[in-house]
Image (cartoon, rainbow, N blue to C red; front, top):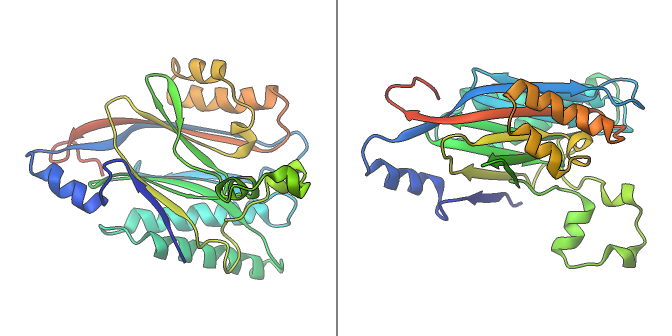
Length: 271
């Protein structure tokens, strides 16, 4: 079993924190504000996305796997369990335990509902005294907006990305677009949640994070991202969802926008 991890200090986050502490009073990143928007896809019977937060520090967006019964329940369960565990986590955070608990809960909800199998992709963002961390599994993406430019912070866990990592030309396999988009990692199956990814972020004042389902990110262009930069968080999230649907999106569409700030950890009270 493996866990994809990355941190932008090119050293383990706990080591980076010890170096930072040598400099005296450390500026702690926190969520200054946030906004969400979600809409049912025009070809969907119900919205199977979920989005929530806890205490202004822990945030999550999940996408129930389309075409399977129980997608909405899977997404809601995933978000609730991940947020509950993140909000109570000690430092350092046991990310594997969080993912395992969420995976077990999604599977348990399926059994309770009499469903053979369901699933959900998820991205979560946690702000704490040790910094900002992104947890990711599936194809819910997280972007960082810095100076108006979007930077992807996650890589989809799907067939297309797996083939790219293995340097296999998908044309050789004759796979259709839907097959290439099939998830290789998600919550809801015994082995599907193994290769989750965790990323520790460096933060500068004014950074924004966007978490969105594939019903949003598959339909965005540069003009939309530039427009987002001038809006507050709630309006920015609404624009991302509206733009995706206007561009012809048929899937459920959910976006979360968080504005980050830096403050003295001994004074702000955040985290």
